[in-house]
Image 1 (cartoon, one colour):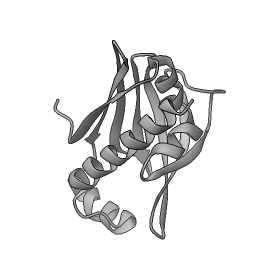
Image 2 (cartoon, rainbow, N blue to C red):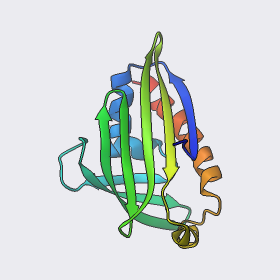
Image 3 (cartoon, rainbow, N blue to C red):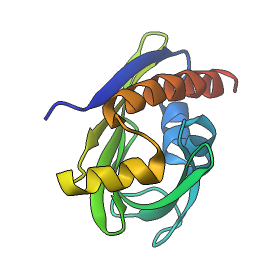
Length: 151
């Protein structure tokens, strides 16, 4: 299935460094546009099946989510997001080694049921989630590149 928003960036850093940033709740929180951090619920860190409580922010709006890691390797980190027990999205980071470091592709799929969309629009202040996520991904990837290359 085609993602609702996706972009990639070339990073002059080893794939392992990028993986460590995107799979770290703190590291991802420093790079992401809306996600601001979280805590592991049933595991000490990233692994398939691990769950984490995330906190998202947009202006004065704040909303929690619970996510489950579905992929956790140096080539892909992905998780399914729920809000109030409902599937809302999937986020995925694909990391491909290149001659100069790696290429990172961030993608997301909107999983919200139609009836839930107006509720999330009110809670998050986002009318067009696909357009906003595209902008967010582009900003996140720029921050990720800077963080990975600065070490």
